Image 1 (cartoon, rainbow, N blue to C red):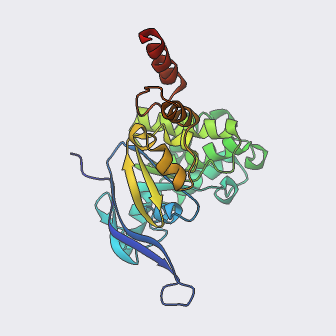
Image 2: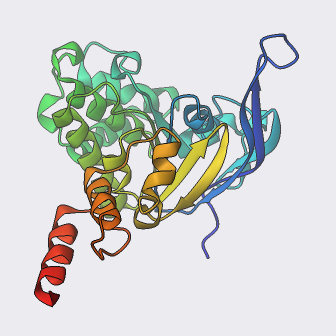
Image 3: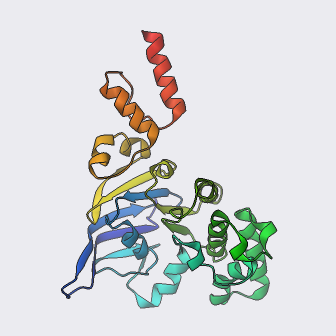
Amino acid sequence: MAIAIISTEGLSHCYNEGKENALLALKDVGLSIEPGEFVAIVGANGSGKSTLAKHFNALLLPTEGRVLVNGMDTADPDKVWEVRRTAGMVFQNPDNQLVATVVEEDVAFGPENLGVPPAEIRGRVGRALATVGMEGMARREPHLLSGGQKQRVAIAGILAMEPEVIVLDESTAMLDPLGRGEVLDTVTRLNQDKGITVVHITHYMEEAVRADRVYVMAAGGIAFSGTPREVFARVRELRQMGLDVPQVAELADRLRRAGLALPEGVLSATELVDALCLLWSKN
């Protein structure tokens, strides 16, 4: 088994610790993400998923327990910048992440702050924009781009820092379906073609279907985890937790409860049609 690129051990986080308004957002969270995995973390509002994501980039530090990123303890002040180089973060609102007036300058911002030589920065910017399909937009002003394009520029800015992990903290939440598709297609390609580890925090269950593994969070902890097929077979449990499920999984569950002998873990329309056709042929 590969050594985890991200792991947490007994991770707890309390906001405003020691004050009257203290809030325990994470409780004894333990997980392990291997290099090259595409992991989705889902949960209802207030479940702790975004708080967890911020620990992967050392934006938050544990109240208890520890977080390791490529073997580095995020609480070690000497490792903060190396942790952030290893795990790049893409936030919910791209406007909060774009800092320059021209796309290529924005993508260059991260490498410049890392002290990368100018000649290498130019190469990195070009490669990053090409990777996210934005090479023709290098001289455009970010405010003229669509939401999906802005997020792809934000991802390019992270790629130019050459991270091993990309953490998306509900990065598709403010986008329309077209923009969400653009961003998910981009990170899926980065994961499959370049082996970049992807951690996708989302409340869109159809997006989580793309992952290799899904963690379901509730009340600051991990409720359960598994492959998408395993997780979304638990339709009624997810519903009880206030979560949506992929439409096909929901339909398959209703048909199963109506008496049809459908297999567990149906996730796509094609799988559902095949299962129904098989039942029809048997009958």
